[in-house]
Image (tube, rainbow, N blue to C red; front, side, top):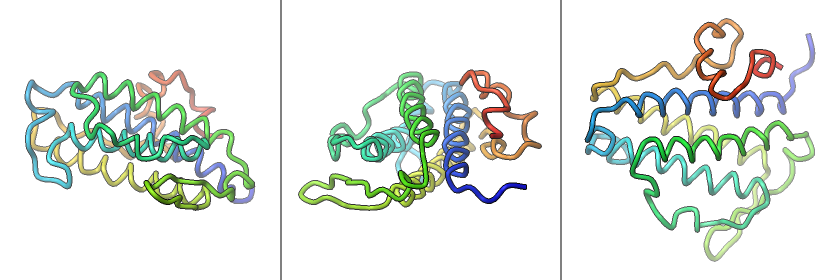
Length: 187
């Protein structure tokens, strides 16, 4: 058995994130007219608002991790997408960027200081801390969407079948959508 590899852990979290987002967005694409934007009880008032929030926060942090300067412009439009298909496509794009970042991660990059533009100041944090924060944020809000789906015509999908080998039988459709295979996911 090999030693614990934190870089592998971040890579697997990025894979999990992309796979869970595909499954969740597919469920949202099956909503009946009006359900996506309907007012619901949660931190954000709708599935649409919550998924847009996940996306804009991903833009903000992934750009910072990549060394960009997008900063608070990521939030210029609070809900940039009105349609589930447009939102899913943009989420998939930023998920690919996050996967690429994590696939290129090394211990030195993980410890690198990331400048995060916060209006009139620069927040400085280690890349691994930013990644931990980002993955927690995504999981937190995906859980809220999952709960909101319970009040719709679409059953909330299982979102935790992506990391361990025994779950391979459940993730085939999502792996195929990304053109990934089990070897990629398990390395």
